[in-house]
Length: 126
Image (cartoon, rainbow, N blue to C red):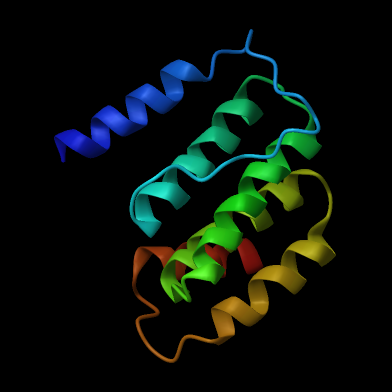
């Protein structure tokens, strides 16, 4: 648990609003397991969103998280990443795209609909 806190704190601390990211630069997944890599990409996107970064920059980090999950065939992590990106797209008034992304991922689950991640995905789809 301490390691996760250190990774999260370091990531948030390193992403100050004064840091500039080139639009040509794409987010690089950190070393570690799927969950750590994906979580860090999602946190980076959220920190950038809070600090008012351009939507395209924020979306790149959400997309990177989604790609990490898909590359590992990690269904639950794909759901988490898709839910985050879909929520962001809803804020950007891109509800059709959000639904098209999240609905098939959610539909791939046959059980566990009371798990928090599936409950959250269902709420975003509503």
